Image (cartoon, rainbow, N blue to C red; front, side, top):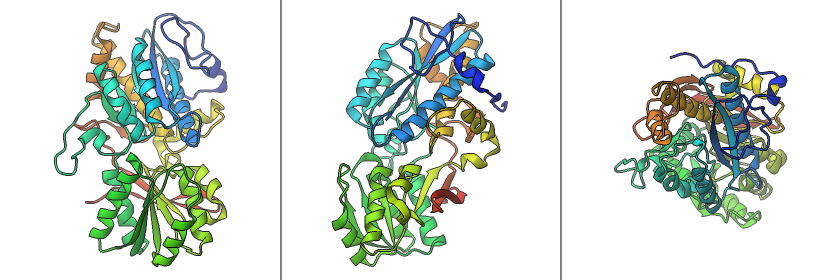
Amino acid sequence: MRQRSLIAITAALSAGALTLTACGSRDSDDKGSDSGGTTVTIGVDAPLTGDLSALGLGIKNSVDLAAKTANKEKYVEGVTFKIEALDDQAQPSSGQQNATKLVADKSVLGVVGPLNSSVAESMQKVFDDAKLVEVSPANTNPALTQGTDWQNSKKRVYNSYFRTATTDAVQGPFAAQYLFNDAKKKKVFVIDDKKTYGAGLAATFTEEFKKLGGAVAGTEHINPDSKDFSAIATKVKNSGADVVYYGGEYPQAGPLSKQIKAAGAKIPVVGGDGIYSADFIKLAGASAAGDLATSVGAPVEELPSAKEFVANYKAENYKEAYEAYGGYSYDSAWAIIEAVKKVVDDNDGKLPDDARAKVTAAMQNVSFDGVTGKVSFDEFGDATNKQLTVYAVENGAWKPVKSGTYTG
């Protein structure tokens, strides 16, 4: 399988990559000129405003870069790609409305997103009913691909749903193994935000930590809308725990870490990919030093396959960082581009009338060398790449500590 070429894109490209046509509304950042042919829209659903917008904007920009790269390379002959980015504000109801809007645009042949597993739950059936493929760069809840009873009997529910991120069935236990075996932490206080992602991640972490011989000093659930965690911080201090594990996202994790330290518990707060953002460090302040996060994949900056992505992203002068899911978002978009290419090639160089169904079917067998490594999907639509990395806050930035896979 060919190494996907990320031909160096200079800033001069940004004004001429994407095509404006009458068949679908275009993203406001897409300022390309009309070059004829067929236009295929790649939808993007992510939180583009609100607390999680740092991650969402990184997703949007990375998909935009993939579309521009495919157009520059003329990767699918006769097809020009553009994006349509919609803001879900991390709310399931908004996500469902966006899914309906994207389904109604017949030029949309694939969607990248969403960020949140709870939002994905609200979108899956809408897309599946329309046979519109969805590839998430960030959803990690196992039930999305393997059914609600995934721990006992895995069953795929939606054939149109795929993801390039590994799941919490791997991420939670991976964190537990690192904390118990490497960091030598034996007594944990577990907190979650009661949401699909956070509660699921905390559960898989706790199960593995206890299996390894660790003790759970206490558990608490927070209100995701709250910023005052002083009562929980006091409980953590009095519990004697030597580490806190938090299932949730950085808008709450940052203040939580700061208040736990202020209460006198000088112990690390650890979370999953939902806290792996520069904004966590901004919110936690100096007290973030020593806190840990796991995130999907190897560090993008250290992957040879990602060097061109990093350089090209910088050359495009996007205002926001690509953040934790940039590489996975690019690969999610490229998976859609590969599926479209397969469908076009199999139909004498043009899109068939049932293009959505054909693209969804083609996605199952997509395989290429991507920004984040080998990109392909198993029988559930899950990423075959199970790589994870532990990061620690050092000198005001996330630094990789250990990469590997969960050995369960």
